[in-house]
Amino acid sequence: MGERFSGSVLNDDGAAGEIVRSLGEIGLNAFAPYLMNRVMARYNANLAEELKHLGMNTAKVRTLAVLSVTPSATINELAVFAVIEQSTMSRTLDSLEEQGYIRRQSRNEDMRVRDVSITEEGRTAFEAAWPTMYAFLLQMFEGIDEDEHRAFVTTLQKMLRNVRVNEI
Image (cartoon, rainbow, N blue to C red):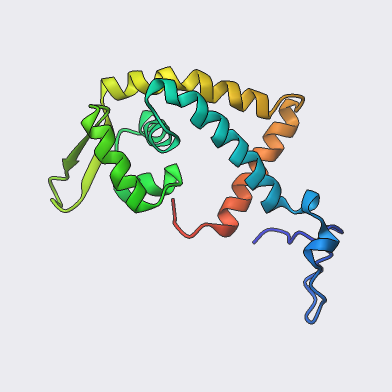
């Protein structure tokens, strides 16, 4: 187990019976979940607006993004990796399949499990959306140098390990 965060912002030394700081004491601008939600809400809103002209939405493009870097995935895996609720993922996959962007196949060893993979049409659709996603990524990290970016991504990966429910 790694070293426990004990920064002065949270004033958390891990001692039993300590006083829990209020949100007012921490402040919204120092409350990481609030800041992460604001950043991602803006990224997703910008992305959704730009994807309309491609006939896509954020759920579809996230799904195609995952499938563009993996040979196949189950519906459950896609829901986790694309950060989409399973019911929404099922509807998204139905739509992507109708558009010819994905293919679903049962596994030979277990016919109950269906693997989802991207088609060439799906890859082309994702490649049309990627420049927009990349432009918003660059905008988000404007003025942030390589070392800061690497440290930030490393911190996010550690945070994800701390909170994740799934092994993936």
